[in-house]
Image (cartoon, rainbow, N blue to C red; front, side, top):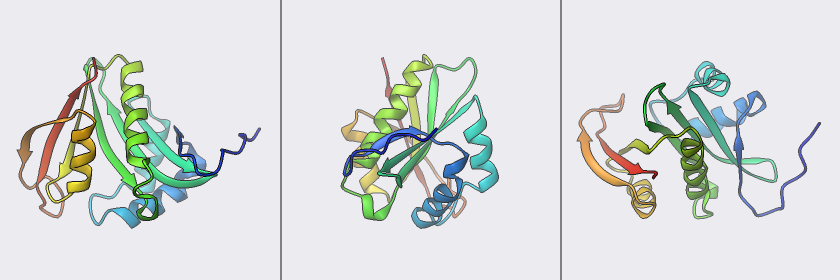
Length: 157
């Protein structure tokens, strides 16, 4: 059974499946220079009860992805990764993924979303701040290349 085609020009967010692996890996290497998620890691996350991989598409083309982690007994969800294809920036892909991630966390009864973002990534910081995330710390040397990360959180109430 195949899904009905999406209306053109509209960003559609859905849960990723194994068919998305190649496109996820292409997106990962186009968007990030370090801390890349491997094929094996994506495969595990797609099949995991403690992770959720979301993809944003337009008429079957992958525009972005988000990876969330959930820990049993925790009221917090963690947005581990949010990526938007360079040619899709400005189309609301990041905001659509973030809304879907927050909705998924609420369905799992999480009361808070937390994340880290590279200090130099002002566009992502603006996205998070406009969506109600508050900066609450700095993690020096967080990324494998030594880059620093800002910590953000949002009450999902």
